[in-house]
Image: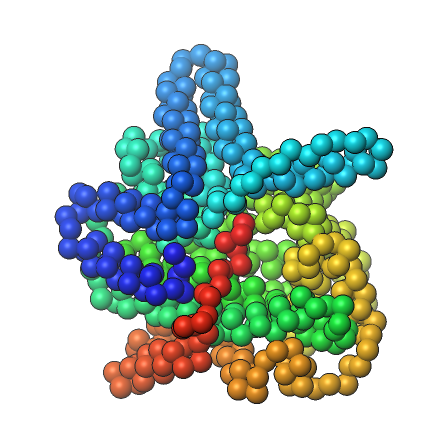
Length: 498
């Protein structure tokens, strides 16, 4: 069931209505049933996988609590380590089989072929379960939190099952922490008009990002990247810039709809995006982009590896490990690993060049607080991130390198205007104009957020006629210019494949 489908637009209001009507003591049971129904709309049998992951991590939490009661320090630590290890091994084994088996088998076959060894590749016809990476990481985070003593193990299996399967953020995040979401399941949520209104407005903005912006951008990007051999370097450059905004709108829209939907029901989910394209370094970009995953890797991989506590070289090694794993998490293909490694290399190079940059700024008397310097850093960061997006979007590393070479060489004609290229890339005159206006709206909204101007709070403080003018303008704008309806196959959110 997609957020941008008619089924969800009927499902969600019905869930909210029943949720606030039924007694508090059984609300978690109701939400659990709704969450599993929501997930089973894709593939009912894969709900068993989520249930298996839930049972393993639930049991590991209880065993960890029991192990902590041991009086002998050595035995206690050994038992706790075994509980965490078994939880991780079993869950990652399931994730590996369904997501990475084909990738690993193909890699082994290719390596054997290079060594002139003939290997018969085993064939498995399995479909990647939607959201498996997200709920697996969320469940594993719970295991580590219990191990560290940051939260007590949940005794009620059904409440814990709801934590793993909570439908707004189930298939594409945010990847929630147990000390945030699990605690809220026990809280009593009353209907509050202001909170419900704010949640619906955030959902409305998410629908604008997905149904209008992301879908229009997808038309242009797909037309170019699917026929990149026939395109000029300038068109590939424009498509790459547009893809940077497409993936931001597509994934950001899911996060906004998920956070807004949870807010309507009284739950607070963590922020997942914070104006990432206003970052002044790649490191800052990753503190603002997919925050729930970035902080997950920080808390559960980077810090356990040693973080920055063991010298510069070890810190750089840890960064590269984290970003290579992050690339592999995004997809079972080498171009995702290359994308992750490139982002890691950016940060290592930035750390290594920091003393040189500091000296250059002193020599040239650079004012780091000036608008021009900040703008230059933002544009440079956006350019570096956009280069990495080429390998994220391309079908292979070699294809990404070829696209990058053609962009840098500006092969073919590059004298087309922006508008001419958008038309050539598959957009009509109407959709081209709508896209440009909507990109302006997106930029204005992000500028306000970057300057700590909360638009929803500002709108709700205005007069009633002005508020409702904005509400109706947004709703009718989405209905008139959005991509949906008969003959349209509602596209999945990009991060569903991860």
